[in-house]
Length: 252
Image: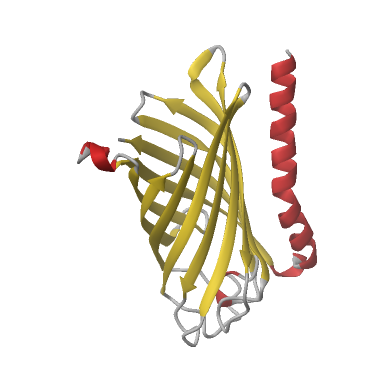
């Protein structure tokens, strides 16, 4: 009973913290916020290069692909391909260096911006640090990433965007393959650029859902994600996306 109460409190605290950036910023930008429904699908594969040679078992590879829909699922507004190489410092800590490509096809909801792009191709390079903390109540994952964003039309300026994720996974006692999953990730802009937005808060993503572990190699997750983006798509309009998110994780 005590364990259940503690898990509930941790979950409530994480959800409350995740909503603060959205509420604080959304109140200010209330007249310029577009609310929308959509979905995200992702597949993530991660594993050790020890399958090639045991001598490099601490080296890791991370491959990821995403499709993202908005406008009530009528528009595929962005894709994402990510690849990274990592090194496992300990059983819990891993460092990464990676590359992300994001082709975007944004929808102009307001119609006010005559220079609204039909296609945006963003490229990122980044280091990251991940720490996994197993406890009696579940597993916490902390991930820190600092992106260098190369944006079209940004006058050859590089936007730097740190992002911080906190994730919690709690297997249910009655069925350990079924887990409660919640996470929050906050993005900040470190420097003001022509088309990369003002420095400060950029966006927040908060997720709550469930996961099913088929075996040590495959896990499926599904649930609700709220994504709040301030000044998205190089305009003054902010977006509050309500998303159905599904994920397939592959470990090797």
